[in-house]
Image (cartoon, rainbow over all chains, first blue to last red):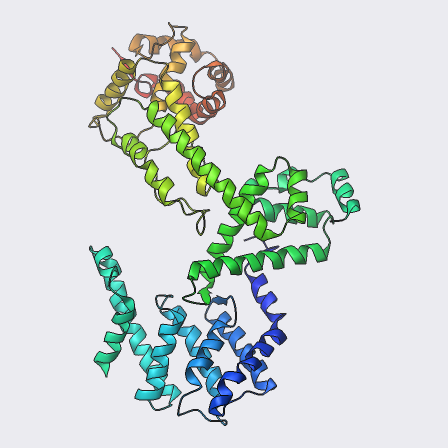
Length: 176
Length: 322
């Protein structure tokens, strides 16, 4: 690709908008404050850094602060989050989110993945990020294997007509 | 863009060899940058503008299901964006006008204009396909016929919004001269233009004459009539070329083995360069189809012809009757 215009311009552009993005994160305190959770300016800036690095490491590019916003909206009501672990947990969740979006090759929507993560975190692994990561890892392997098998079958069109949404949840419920 | 800048780039000669039509905007920008005819601020603005437009396209692509995409996907959508913008810039007339347009118009508008241009190209390609169908040769070759019959599916599947730079499928029938650098709708249009030209050339000969030539070719190589993956125009062209050389009656395609020997003996005493000049000269005067395409075809097959003359195997190379 010609060096004058390439996809790396995007990352440069993102870095120049870090302050703006951190301010947007601070606005999300309006949602989480209801549960006694807020981020400091420093934590908001740190979350933006984590996001930018996680995007790079997961070979992704994001159009807006979407994932941060969706994760905060979903997780701020968690009974396992407190003032003390809120910032750190958000950083970890964000890293996991981008990693598994790529691992799952964008086959599931943001909301679907966040719902799975939330349910594992809240109901199955009682606030343990490490255990939750193992759970998503297993689910992701299973889903990828099954989708790979489907892709390779002769009856691809029929198989792909399955509702992915139900499909993922069936897997998850089976494991429970 | 300031007036001074416009004047200065008009007075400074852009090096045409640095500007590639298959990567127009980027090579144009690079050339302006090389000559110092674009300021850092202007360049930065265009790059930022491209990224903003790319983000907008990614939003459409994800359909609000996801706010992020894999870098490979983003790269592909970027190629799509640049291809579409290029389609517009190339169409504005000349390089000077393209530079002015590029520097004065927001990228998102260039993209929308590009989409309009692509729509026109698809319409044009559909018209060319009609021409190809109308001039279709009555030959039972499966590659030739299926390519023509299924081409409409390629045009229907062509995704100008997200995959404008891709050809949405394979084209099985080989042309005499294949263009490897064309992408997207340009490749589809280019293919149809050349196929129309090939058909146009062949149609000046009797349908029975072409069918007979094709059958002889298949018999000689023991191919079932439907199966050889061969360019029919090339078979017709090369026999037509030597008929012209022998100054036979126009419209004749058949060559006898005796005539092959005459050709070999006539061309035996001259050098390869002279053979190339003689046969190239005849090719350039051949009518039917597109004369430029005919010359390109002659240039492409010339090494095979020269080789056949040198090795006295013209009888095998041409399609001859006893």
